[in-house]
Length: 118
Image (cartoon, rainbow, N blue to C red):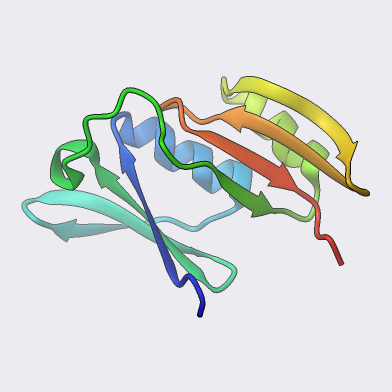
């Protein structure tokens, strides 16, 4: 079993596109669908899509799922995220033998940034 796609409901689309493009290096391309614009790109083998909250039918004020993204450089990803205004949940620190940090994206979703466990 594997995960091959993640769809994130976005309220502040332009800020979310900038955030995920710069922090995670996802090349998000616009897609015209459902009479609106969605954005799709790949993070490793996983397709990542940003979909307007209204289309996704999401009404949550905060996230109900937290994602962990393995990045090459946690400190750089963290600095980029905070430079874009991300709220800091935890600064880069060693956790179980690997560097990890956590932030909130422009829509308030929490996400972890981690170095590879390998």
